[in-house]
Image 1 (spheres, each protein chain N blue to C red):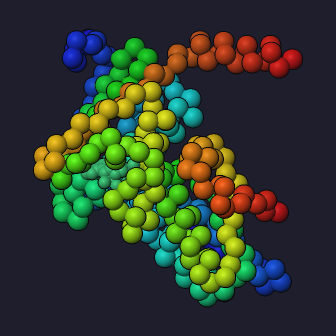
Image 2: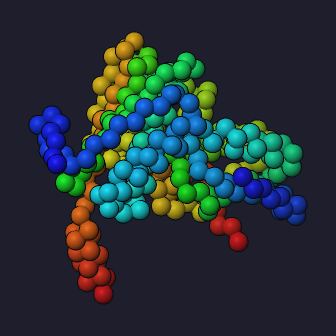
Length: 104
Length: 164
Ligand SMILES: Nc1ncnc2c1ncn2[C@@H]1O[C@H](COP(=O)(O)OP(=O)(O)O)[C@@H](O)[C@H]1O
Ligand SMILES: [Mg+2]
């Protein structure tokens, strides 16, 4: 996972660069929480652009980080959902709670 | 040569066994995807199969065996234009299968499980059946029809025609 913090907007972008399953998610979760605690952002965006595979572990990951972001007073969004990643997000219903945002 | 499985003819068969380590989840779905590729699936069909396998294998590892070590088995058959995949464990079994299949139902919310595994398997594959006996284990059987290439070309042609 690559992370980038934009000081001006207090925006933390977490770009997942591996497949997301029950095994890999542990490392992603650990890093994401570490970066959120370190920067204390106002906005956190999970970027799925480089994710070539995701199963339901990805939904658990996002819900968990949503709660964590709430705890530190940040808003969480997701970006670049395509293909079967998009279908899994749609099926889960969590996009009613978590907005999709455009990154530029 | 053609063989028989439960009265059905099939063209190819494979079996796979591995211990219940989460690092084997990727191995399992990639192996099944490689086997399925003989039916010439689209990228999307292959993604569906990989996701469904990943869900079933993960369930065997984290729910079936929990922290204990056990063996996960995968058998798969190819028919004319269909893949059948059976994933089984000798783990703790499921008390109420109907309830387990409900969307968002999970017995491990503390592990950030989403309860979407069975829902994904059901919607990404054509058929899914769960057999489970408490104390003995769980077997998930899924199948998916892979449309032959000519049909896909025809669909694409129709789409082009209706779009223009
Ligand atoms: N192989 C299995 N062995 C034992 N219990 C299982 C197995 N597969 C599924 N379950 C039970 O069914 C529930 C729902 O599974 P699933 O839809 O994949 O959601 P999740 O894995 O997120 O909990 C699990 O929480 C678990 O209680
Ligand atoms: Mg599951």
